[in-house]
Length: 327
Image (cartoon, rainbow, N blue to C red; front, side, top):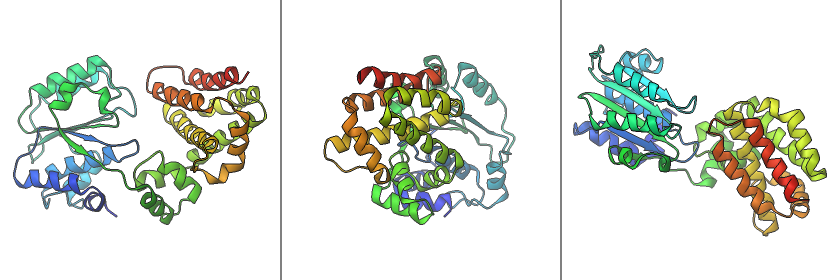
C-alpha cells in the first residue's frame, strides 16, 4: 500500500483537507501535523510537501514521476528537513534555515519547503526563533511542523499554523493488520500500545534491536522476581551497555511501562496486554507492594529521556526506586 493510499483510507480528514486546499489554491504557509507516539507524522509531512511540487499531482503527489523520486532521494534543491528525533533543535538550526530561505528558488516549481519534525525537542530560544520566522511568512515558502506533544509548543506557534491531526486506528483493527503482516500476536499487542500505525509497528517488530530490548526488559523483570538488588545488578551488568542512545532507552522504558501496567492490572483484577508473560507478572504482582507508584515513576523517567541527562543514571534510578520502596 502506497502512503497516498494509507492517507486516503485511514486519514481521510487530513487527505481531504489538504487536497481541497490545493484545488482551491488556498494553502496555509505553515501546517502543524500532530498525532500519538508512533503516528507517521514525518512520512505525512514528506508526502504533503511532495504534493506541492509534483507536476502530475491529482491534486496529491503521484509518487512516481522524476520530481517525486528526486524529492524522495533528497535531491530537491529547495527543501530542508530538521529532525528533532535525531537531535535537539537548536537556535543555530533555525537561523541556518532562515538564511537558506533568503535564497532565490532554484527549482522549476518556485516553491521552497521545510519540515521540522518533532518540534517539541527544542528549547525555548529555538521556539522563539521559529516564531519570528512564522510571523513573517515569505511568498512560496511552506512549512510542515510535526509534534507528538503540542503542549510543549508555544501557544503563538499553535495559533500561526493550520492543524492536521492523524487519528489512531482502533486497537483491535491495528493488531489484526499487524498480525497479517507477520508480526507475532504478543509483539503486536505490545507495540500497538506504543505506536499507532501498521508501518511503524511492522518495522520495529521485525528488527533485531526490538527483540533484544524486549528480552532485556523481561530478563530484568525475571531478576526482579528473585530479588530487587539482583534486578539492579542485572541492569548494570547486562543492559546499560545496550541502552546508551535515546531511541533504545525510550523503547526499553516503553516496554517496561507496558509490563508494569499489566502487573498493576493483575492486582486490580483487570485484563492484561502481554498474555505470554502472565506467569511472571502474577509473581511480581504478589511480590511488589508499590506497583502503582513504580509505574508512575517509569512514566516520569520516560519523559526525561528527551532531556540532555545521563541515560544510565535515569535507568538505574528506576530500579533503585523499586529497591528503596520494597525495603
